[in-house]
Image (cartoon, rainbow, N blue to C red; front, top):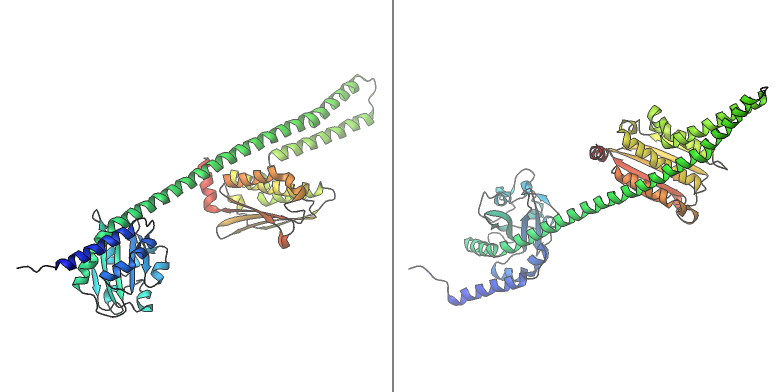
Length: 417
């Protein structure tokens, strides 16, 4: 005749499971859930260390949530399943692991096994049971004691019942966590998309302003000069005698008009960049900006890139040049700088450009260049670069910093082609 569990003991165990179920209600994360039921679980199967190991959806990594003793297992955000001491259970090769002394059990000892907490905390007697939902091992329920040999097959059955009860709840928590992560990723993607859309809109507006400026420059300066010269040439052609001084004056005016036109064209298209490279273009612009300022500040270019920027796709190099160009113009026009240093460097798979001045800094009159700062930030975002703006060395002046990872540069080119 089969043995029967006394009714009183059966009811007591059932009441314990009910209490555990009630304690789980309202717990919204793994750690708070396992700690909420820790005392009640200890009444069923005593332990010194208890943890729930949750396998992530890709099946490659897992995270441990523990109580009783805080170990290195719990401090690792994610650890490879391949290096877990109980990997055979997590991948479904065994239906439980029971050991009298884990410090000497060869099942826990293999190349790369993360067994340090076992030895650091003397976790000898150990019992591990899988948590299974819809045929999938979603994790493991693990009990450990300092005293060796205290767990037996009766404990295996009790922990198995606990695992069956806890598994659906932890499965729901894992699904909720995955949904939150997916929502965060989607929100971040939408934010980036909206940021790029707004950035492109601001840049389009800025380009329209620039086109209008070029049109006004051509109309108000170059076209007006050429009109005056045309009339002087008409009068000269109608004159009975040619005045050499008048011819020389017209020639000088033509030279000035052509120089002004070249400046307008140069501002619209950085031909030095295309012909001679990035560093030459930056140096050329820096020299002109410094020369045309009154009083002229000193300008210095330090290039440690080894020509790395010239190997980038054209649109990326032009965008980086425009950012440096704007930063230099702001330093000259708004900061009242006495010294401007442009530094180009290429290290650890990224290109870093900095423009530093010793001017007024980011307050006061410097606020006038707000649109220029927005343009630089937008240009950087459109090529996947990180844009930084802050005080210069010693807390004075301003430093503009642009960092572009080479992988991000390649991705930006793919998105624009």
